[in-house]
Length: 301
Image 1 (cartoon, rainbow, N blue to C red):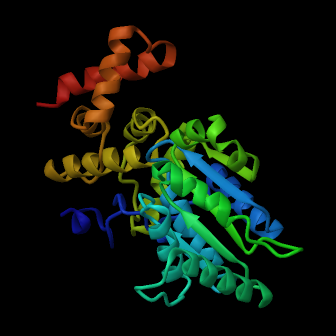
Image 2: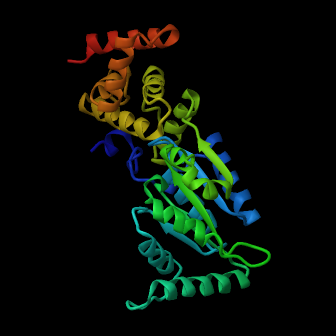
Image 3: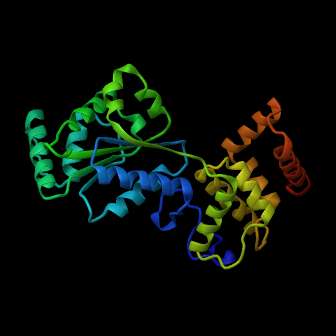
């Protein structure tokens, strides 16, 4: 649509996690450091949580890319699996052949022997589960039992859970206290601060081939404010703002395009409406919101 217009080589703000665009911001670097330390220790569970849209799946894929060739990894992007289905998926990811008629007990035994063989070769397996808050209760318990597999010196499999804050709420119940006590490392991925969001958007633009600033300073600051530090929302707002600028034949998205994008994005528009009704916007936020709202009323048809 607008690649030629803005001199871009590829779309800068797609919603599909793409490790080519990974930005080494403090929060994401801290999460990767926690994962590296955890893998080096070889102990128990690891838990990475973050709000919807904060970049957990991209972080997960970056971690898997970093681990390629270092350890056998099994990645389960769809956690809505019963225990038997989860074990079958783990076996498949590790390249283990399971016959259709194998019983549950035989499947567990084959997995244990395969994991033991990997550990003896100095390559203990890593199981990575995305969207772990959606795991059924019995599957979480099956993971705890899977983590019991160990030699005298090390676990046969490390389990890394990526999930939304709802995962913390589930694990806080007494029902999961045994699993909770086995979480050796955890990290809560924070939203980006405004300067980080601006740096993040510019980083993606540079990697997409931009040679000139495609957002005015006011537009970039507004997107950083309106996105609430959530990269996914930043993508949506930036993409829509560029579409608006393209439609007007402008080489740069300005304040009016940024706020038109906000008004056209349900999550952002709904929050703004709530803030204004409840009087939560004050100080600098009120000034920025008022200036931008005036710009929208004056410039956007």
